[in-house]
Image 1 (cartoon, rainbow, N blue to C red):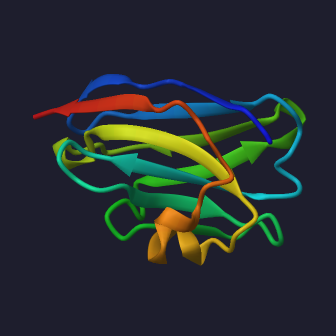
Image 2: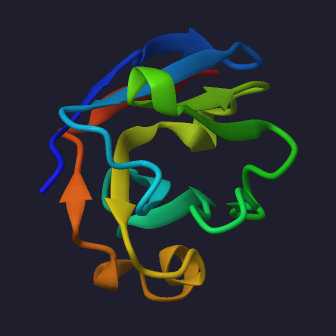
Length: 127
């Protein structure tokens, strides 16, 4: 099972940007799908974005579409989430994750995405 280590979280003002990184202990991104989730205080886990290993197609939650971008660098065994035009509503702990499940699972049944998870990165957006 792949181990994922996150970095890049922090405090930013509304309208600012952050990029989260997630490094894998072994090369696995060619064989499984990758995704980002988040959990805000008092709320359940929410799927944010997913990239299909099969064709590279990307998917986004409506709340972040047009502002966030998921990407990966297989040579560096690292995945990224670029977050622009951040809003206070984006404040949450963000988790990178990998799973052989279809990307639709990220949004329709996120509790089934359980192959591998990062430790979480706090993102706080001030008003």
